[in-house]
Image (cartoon, rainbow, N blue to C red; front, side, top):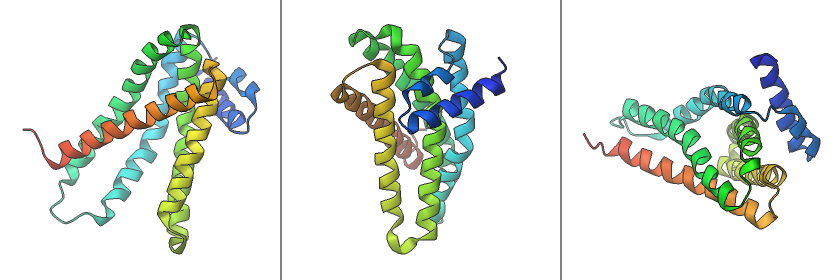
Length: 191
């Protein structure tokens, strides 16, 4: 199967899973090669990520270190894509779900494309309806995507809901920590 076909199948699978269709997992390639190819999702997500970071710069002062901020955010993006799978390798082992690790990461990675689309939609709705509060749309998007991540976790790792919630919160807190460290580095360089 070509990479393009595998990508389209995986994206369709994420769409099916978002509609609570557990058969959506049948559209993914759960091999070691499929695991590594699932990181191609980062390439699909990066332009939208860059757009969101650029959007963050709308309200910064003139002396803001824009170039350093964008560089640090790009490095943080890569670190996030590596950190969570590394942490989950050990979590899956602790949960005695090592055999389900590859399916979990494959689906979780490809699902990030759909998640980013939802975040962009929230940004657009916030811009189109500023009276409703852009933050409200963003909060709804974050909650919806956490629920979606929890469903993926339960489906692929075959864990109870509380364990799935803990894993999604772990991902969120890890991402938040990396983001905070990145922003601090951008604002207060160590060199």
